[in-house]
Length: 205
Image (cartoon, rainbow, N blue to C red; front, side, top):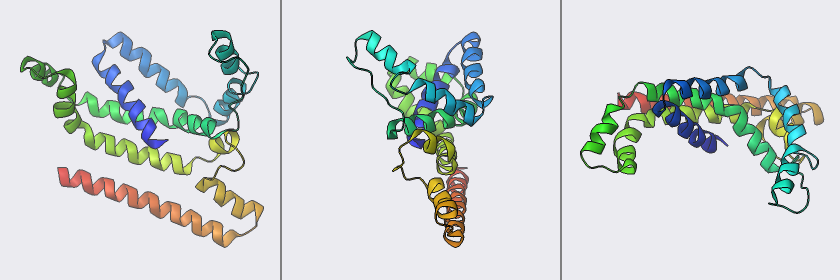
């Protein structure tokens, strides 16, 4: 989910960075709308969108892509999609801030020197923004590890996440020492991830 979020966020941030200001305002506003809605409200929205009689199933049947209605609710796909949706705005704004610090004339110069768009991206823009990608990935991983409600509400009962495991040890088994140990392990993992990101950024500087 973190990798997918960073990829989608980078593509959207790149589109915003390259487009005129009017398109930039629209796309940024769409991303801000997600942050203004609570996670519980988002879950209720997916409950209306993903079931067998939901909007997604009705649209697929009406378009002829499938012949019978299908329910995607309480599947690993629904949990994955919900995680990506919740984390996406954070990765998007991190990557957009990194791209805004770059000079678009560098791409024009690469094009004038005969570089194809793919080559200009891989040889010019990607090396300048890889640290931002690393920061966005670390933040996406932290969010993905910490989010509990979305994968629990949208995914199957057999879906295993760290947050759900902590909850099971606390409430289901009343095993508070194990829950505390798992929570501390999550905190240490987050701190280690932040430390690695800081060290790599410091080395580059």
